[in-house]
Image (tube, rainbow, N blue to C red; front, side, top):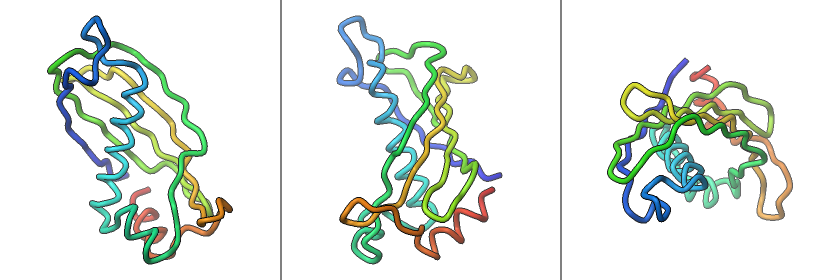
Length: 133
């Protein structure tokens, strides 16, 4: 199983009044990590839209917050593909601060067309995703 690693630093704008990362920002961090993983496979969201008319959307996300992170922390998000169907795939994403896991999420992603209807994952993308399991 291949793991994609995405690194980021927590900036002031990511925190609440107490200097702790605002909980919803973990979703943004994970989105960035998924986009970066896609890029590592040779695709971008823009290219999938332009070349295939395909969008990748989040159908559901189950997130667990374990420990907080704060201003100027260095974080790593590790992402894995868990399962693939004809029109969707599931990812596991874990956020680490050093060796400590601070958050985790199971994300269900669906490929849709411009009308919002589920469509098959583009063949080349599906082939690359299957190599990761």
